[in-house]
Image 1 (cartoon, each protein chain N blue to C red):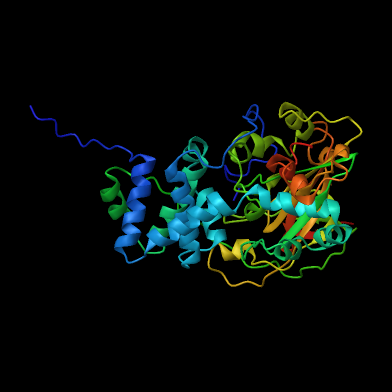
Image 2: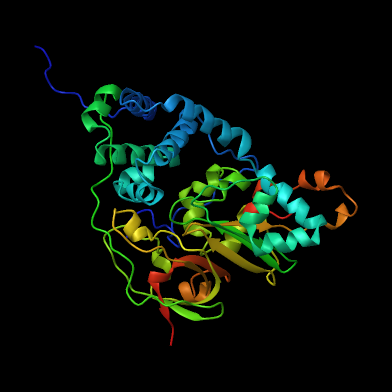
Length: 197
Length: 205
């Protein structure tokens, strides 16, 4: 006897991506070129080395540091780094021996991605988003950053279109290093604030 | 809306899966989804607030189970269907199976009347706003008192912008809260800063 039940399966996520791209193309949107261009930007241009270069410049140039803290967006543009139109404001958060800044986005996963790179998986996960605002020290310690009790933790939740980037402290052993050499030691996670250098 | 996306301060999610060399992408389709939604924004099919809200409108069970880029894909598809660019039938026929989309949108709202301009150092209270539409106010600061530490340039008001409602752009204020005030006896000591739209704030006593 033939089985006439309708089998309803959910399309796999890859089938769904292929379907929407093909459907948009069929409607006359030329997605191919735009996707290629955006994929290139996401993987080759929007990288943490941009933020790292800004930090290194701020370490060696006191005037640039002032401009960076006063208007991050202009200080980024000055070094040739663009931010999307809707990121109208970049606030740079200065660490100090007794101050640790850390950024997050509890509502989605916003970041200054053209400067610090598209966010790593853990930044977008439910665990980091739910816990870092409430259990900041515990979460940082779990991630390998154990802070003394007298270090003030400042958490920044990216709930609007203001973007944040942490300005880590310059390690003492780097006196006399070139800007280029300094930029190479600035990690993405130090720009997010879950690591110190 | 008090949705599943509003995760700040929620408990029970367990340790962060942290690795030093964590990547943004794990599969080629994820890079493609990220580019496709950005392409749709650039092409004027929808704006960023509509995009965020369509993620918030996902079935909570789907939201929790989906990866970040599956949520992105679901928002992209939902908005293309709602805007009349594509149909669900076409998507499901091409995909060879069902294509889960987000739930319909409720109504939005325009700016709050009588908005106040604040200065750094001002004490402010977050209004007790309960709305069915899009809002960028995390529930953990609702009704709480904090101190203004910064002001942004004016942005489109998300509660309106996600719903096609006309509104004035308005600034957001970086407001500093003490974690002890947000979760009395239930948090690590810290200063928690939130970017709060002007419409959500009033002067504290």
